Image (cartoon, rainbow, N blue to C red; front, top):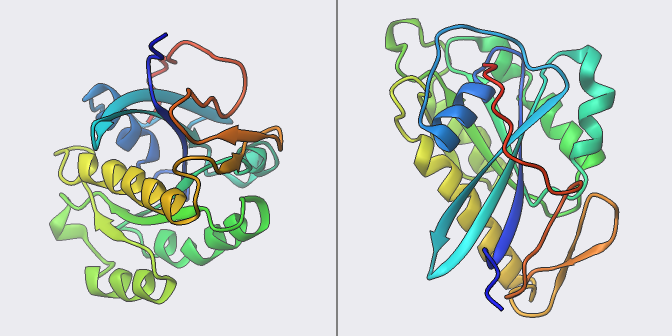
Length: 214
């Protein structure tokens, strides 16, 4: 019996409203981009399958609303995530200042040792940039997590960001002994095998969402 994938990693995109989380997801999953901005209501997700070291890895990527009024809804999705991408807008200082608050959310709701990645989006808006890459790199270095600047519009570093996240998860699970027989908690608090058998993290299997929010 040949499963359609070897591993399934649940990723979460978090950050202030308007930083481009949905646009990053659309670019990576569908290679599309839209200028129109519609705030995500609650949560949305897409799936993309990649090849990593000869293994088929399915990435289930959850896009969360950045607004405070949805926080109680979205916080429940932290649990069971293998990796969390914290996104800020390089043209909005406040979105970078709020990264610390989002990190606190991770500490509060996510599993211990969850893989993290800091992403500064909208790097194509060079003339409007207010958050220096060196400043963001210093923060990431202090947290011992990777950092990248991306542009959902030009697609610069978008692929690299998600593949870096997947690689970080794979390395962490291997170092924790999960590569062959370990377990990671799923969203129901149960163990999900990270081995050659398929892993499903999250709710019941669903088809890919085609909503076009950004």
